Image 1 (cartoon, rainbow, N blue to C red):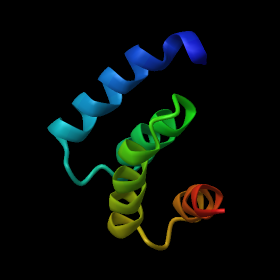
Image 2: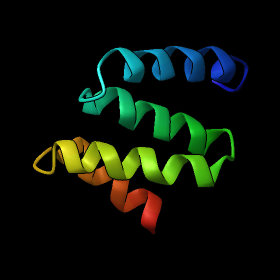
Image 3: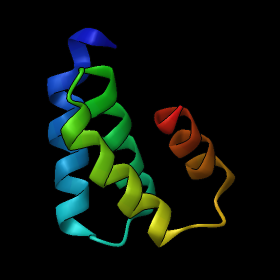
Length: 68
């Protein structure tokens, strides 16, 4: 995954721009930021994803893992 981070960040950013309410894209962008060590960028994306779909188990798990 390490070598794919720049492309993933670009694709997930574009997905978020095209559909600002796409919670999975925001979550994936946040997780990709986490993997790349960009914690300050990850937090708002993960929060936005959770706010869009608070009942999503996947997003709740990602948020819990981040906040741990």
